[in-house]
Image (cartoon, rainbow, N blue to C red; front, side):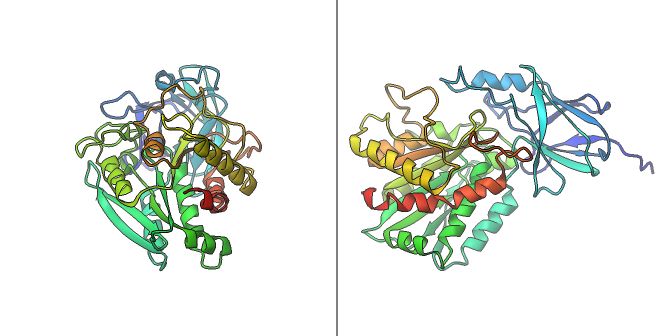
Amino acid sequence: MDLSPTITIGGNFPNGSIEVFGADDPTNIRLGLLKDPVSDFMGYYHYRASGVRGVECTFRIVNAGESLQKRLAGRENVEDAWTNTGAMASYDRKFWFRVPAQFDGTVFSFRHRPDHDVCFYASWPPYSQDRELDFIARAQLSPRVGIKTIGQSVDGADLDMLIVGAPGADKRKCWMIARQHPSEMQSGYFVEAFVDRLLDKDDPLVRRLLDRAVFYIVPNMNPDGARRGHTRTNAAGINLNREWTAPTLERSPEVFYVRALMEETGVDFCIDCHADKELRCNFLGGPLEIPSRSERLNGLFAAFERAWAAASPDYEMGHPYPGGAPETADLSMAWNWIAERFGCLSVLLEQPFKDTSWWQDPVQGWSPERATRFGATLPTALFGVIEKLR
């Protein structure tokens, strides 16, 4: 048996995603992004390289430039997703570090000489299904938590919702949804830290918060896309964050079930957790462009921003949603539809893939560790506006 090292590249594991065009020459490993089914969405990658210890490898994602054809409107003067960034790498799938890269407008390439036989690479550190299951199982051990399976995805995966606190007529109904776009892994770490703080029985602020509010939390709106390694869509190739006006059980059961429960409980606050590949900051989009926008909602949004900036420097003021507010909001997007339907403070959170503008970590950039710490600050920000939500 020949035990000499051979470089092997693959993404055939949960959440893996890569196409291999050639790995015979370590100085020219040619790879490709995979498109989500029935769509042109692409941009996410997650793969492992084996047989690479001490080998100077050059990885080239040859079709990276194609992903820029689906850029959001209003981004003409914003740095693209591939410029001034790099791949995230890990040997143990726990600590991830950034490998600097170059982008020529078409090919995204980076060099790395791994210290071990196997190295994992991803556009951002994955939040695994095992970690999600462990988090939900751990959370349910708290007397503050109830778990409800609210339906199934297109592939038949369970959609879990955590209910934190005791419902009551006088309590604010606060919702959190995450990972409509499965490649935006930042939300997994953020939500986990937020819930962990809500479960800290010795935290006095949380005690007061739970006296005033009950939380409905859907940690993963798109389990199929997460398992399949999709960039933005579910198993049917549907962008869930364009389904909120008319979800169906065939196309978007994930939105259908969550929206039905919101109608049942009511909503006083909602945060929809995402991540942005281009901007270097944590920023919010607020319900300022919906048809029923009002001075009350404008004021609530501004107060919430100030409260979060006071709770954490990682929330930076002065970063409005790119492109400005259109004349008519797209109500097929969750945050807009929820704000319009319930007349509530409904916000879109975007975390960076790159790093923040106010402080940079040259080793990791914006990392799971920082997303975790950021998630733990949300209760403080919410406490600052909880009495004003209704």
